[in-house]
Amino acid sequence: MAQPPAPEPATPSGLAQAQAAHESAPSSLLDSALFYQLLLGEITLQDGDPSASFALMLDAARKTGDAELYQRATDIALQSRSGDAALQAARAWKQAQPTSREANRYELQILIALNRIADTVEPLKTEIRLAPDVERASVLATVPRAYARVSDKKLAATVVEEALANALKSAATASAAWTTVGRMRLAAGDQLGALVAAQRAQDADASDEGPVLLALELMEANQPDAEGLVGKYFRGNPTARPNLRLAYARALLNLQRYTEAAAQLQIVTREKPDFLEGWLLLGSLQLQDNQLTQAQTSLERYVALAQQQKPQGESEYGLAQAYLSLSQVAEKRKDYAAAENWLSKIDNPSDFARVQIRRASLLASQGKLEQGLQLIRELPEGSAEEGRLKLNAEVSLLRDARQYQLAHDVLAQALSKTPDDPDLLYDQAMMAEKLDRTDEMERLLRQLIQLKPDYYQAYNALGYSLADRKIRLPEARELIRKALEYVPTDPFIKDSLGWVEFRMGNTSESVQIFEAAYKAKPDAEIAAHFGEVLWSIGQRERAMAIWKEGQLLSPDNETLLETLNRLRVKL
Image (cartoon, rainbow, N blue to C red; front, side, top):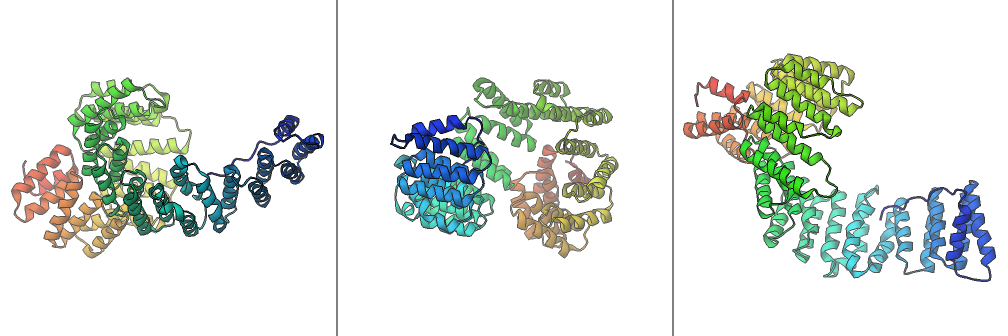
């Protein structure tokens, strides 16, 4: 129900348009006069007088009652950006043909475009009433998109709910209607109201996918109760489409609940072994968790299925991503020949930069850092996006090689050109921390917080740094808690909170926080901290076990190595 596009400007084919309109009109004694009127209307439009053209066309439409002429008059008004005239024509059309869905749609779209939201109740009711029974649910689903650009979202939500009163009561449409109301409430910032609507939608039809998709959006909007609707749906619909479970996995990933996301992907790939997207996402997640054998199996499964299925519309992006990930698996195993072999399978020019960056990493892993940097520096830089890609790749390569001063210098040069770039400020602060320039790090992070108050990583980084240095611990805790306000489930920020609680002597609370963080995301950094807390309270066997897990995940993790060395622990 988007606003109809304006018609193409009239051209010398106006005669043909007039002829077509004339032929579509009913025969009458005024045929010749009507034809002349239509021709004159098109000519005046060509001559730059849309007002006169509109008047002639609307008059012809009223004389004949022809839908095409009403539509032409409305389109001329829209083309000339005369909303009031367009509304006049649409309403005249609707009055002449009360059962015309097209006339009603035009009126509804124009009212929304004019931001006359309160006046859309009746046209929206009519749109739903005129829709065939088999189309009514899909019509309801399009309503939130129609109101997506209105300025007063709360008014729009109220108007839509009023217009959908009958649909909300009908068993055939209640689920779709409540889902629509929920989406309108969510757009208006009423998350609790949206959750109630999603619950009512699911109560009306437990097999409908609409409430589940709304619940997934609410999960990502930090409404934890919405997840109950998702779980209820899957329990009641064991043969649900794999795309829904994949969407659930993506929502969990966005909430940094990696272990639970992996569990959902395992279900997807087990129940639907030929589901492409599930294997690719699962393989990527397993690679991130350093589960190299499992990652290779999943990614190779994706490649085999992609080559076999060749799905319509499938670009080569998915295969390229799989090959890049397989190359990374081989690199981690120090099998550089295999890593290069996977890269050689990517021949799409659009992937050239990604392939070269991966090759640069391979070179750096073999002690050829300069050659790797040269590959990155030779990449084209025709746009700001390409320039940022090169910069990030160079800094990442230097950081991984522990060339922190060089990375700091590269970032300093970039910041001299864009001193208020939030991401550059954050990266530079992290490089300053690696160089033990804590004053510079704190200055940059505070500058970033002032510039972009919702940049939660800055609160976390500063709070963790204070806690790690055992200074200003109450402030450190407040900073980390501020970060958690933005991402309450982030396991890495919970790791920071657990660490500051430990530094403040709240050991039992620290253990509980680390239990949850490590369960959500087994990670070497979290393992280092969690193990140290357990070690301090005498749970040394468990501490050793967690440290060993962390070492398997990332043998070169600096925090883990420093912890083991400081505590004189040998695994």
